[in-house]
Length: 118
Image (cartoon, rainbow, N blue to C red; front, side, top):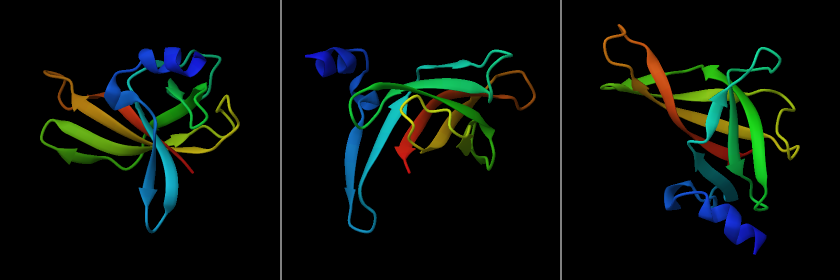
């Protein structure tokens, strides 16, 4: 029952899933729009909340965009996870999806992240 309640907090697109890839085997990925900027006492730029492969609520701290690619008024970029910041002790890779903020001369705002277990 506990896992059902956790998944009810996410829309279908945000639910974690195990992906079967013939070259990589099975791996975990999850989308999240549940993040906030870090405080002065925290490392990184954002704290991301998501459900890990074991169905547990997990947090990680992430940095900012490091290799942006632009498509129209959107940007996609890999983002580094702050070392040893995951609440479950696992290592994750993160891809950030950004939208351009109108009338700012090219500033972008993080809209969602794709979290994959390394």
